Each structure stands twice: as C-alpha cells, then as structure tokens.
Length: 270
Image 1 (cartoon, rainbow, N blue to C red):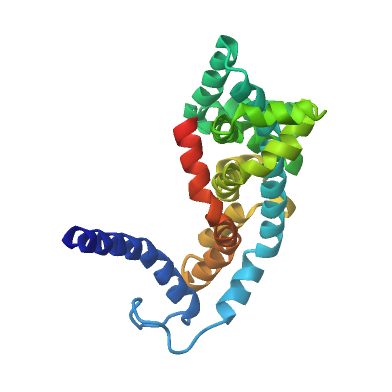
Image 2: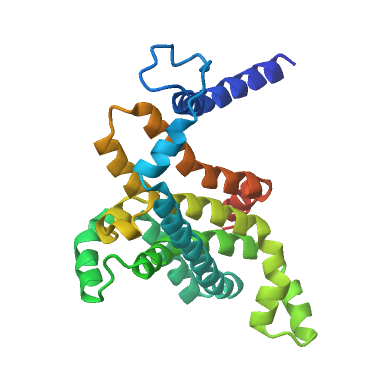
C-alpha cells in the first residue's frame, strides 16, 4: 500500500511538472500587456485582444492553413507508402527483406541537417523552393522510416492465418491489406499520425529554408518572425503559441485511445 501511494504521488508530481509550462503559457496569453501581477496567479482581467493581435500581426491564418495542408498531405502520403512498404517486410521474413528493413530503420539515425546543403541544391534544380508539394515530398521521405517501423511491428503481431483466410475467399494481397488488415492497425495508425504529425507541424528547418515566400510560410516560421519583431509583447507571443498548439493537442486527444497501444505493439513486436 505504501509503495502504491508513493508511486501515485510520484506520478502526480511528474504530471504536474509537465503541466506547469502550459499553465504559464495560458496565464501569459490571457493577461494584459505590461501587467505587473505574478505570472503564477490567474489574471483577473482577461485580455482576449491578445489573440486577435497575434492572429493579425503574425499572419497566423496563412501559417495555419499552409501547415495544415502540408501536415495532412504528408501524413497521408507517408502512411500510405509506409503501409505498402511494411506489409512485405513484415510478412516475408527473408534475408533480403531483413537487410532492407534494417537499412530503413538506420535512416532514422541520420539528422536532416547533415544533408541540408545538397538537398537545397536539389530543390533549386527541381524548382521546389517556395512550393508546398516539394516540402510535402520531403516530409514523406524523412518520416517513412518511423511509419515503416510502426506498421511492420504491428503487422508481425497479427496472425498470418488472417491473410490466408482472406486469400482463400478470393481477396488479393492489396485487398487483404486494406480491407482486412488495415482496420486492425488502428493503434499503429494513431501512433504514426501523432508522432509524425507533431514532427511535421513543429518542423522549422525545412520550412525556413524551402518556404521563404510570405504566402507559403508555415506556423513555425510565422511565429519566429513574430517573436523577432514583437519580442517586447510577450503576452501576444504567448497567445500566438497557444493558438498554434491547439490543432496538435486536439489530434492527440482524439487518438490517445490507440496511441500508447500502437507504440507498445511496434516496440515489442517490431
């Protein structure tokens, strides 16, 4: 009993420690500029104008739209390609497939910045600078290893007899994958969407180098410019950060039911 109480107390302390930054962000976003009140106290006079000022000054509407397009298209494309790649790697455990799987996983260890210079040269050659489609292809490519890792681990946990039963009924491999196996991969899909989605949503390097025009800037670049120009208005900056984080918070809350299960399956069975 004492161990359980201590464990719950420790977990509560850790949880509160993670919630403190969000609490401070909300307090800053709601209080009036120049307020001398303690940052730990909730504001008595809420300044909703901070959100309107941040929205207009940082052009958050354009940034949110561009980021939403890039993130949703990248996640969808990476999930589709990753699922098609993970299926044969998980179902046919040959030496060649093992080598390919190991090579894909090894790519997760390569930092993006190490190839940024030749990648920029390549983007210039294909006229991909200031083009959303080019950044979408980059995100699909660099996030494929994580998608393959999660899907391959989950597919290995599903009995092969399910595939055989579907094929006996006349289903081909693609139909078996998308109509029989894919509904069983909800945890892996949720984990992939949350992990990859947050990574793409918070991406700064690719967006900064390859999306320089004002009409294609993402939310991270827009907020960076806003900070540099209005660094004395910390309340408005906090309001902008709060707005930019809400979509990913909503995504996690919608998929948290399957998120942990998908991670555990991919880690144990992968």
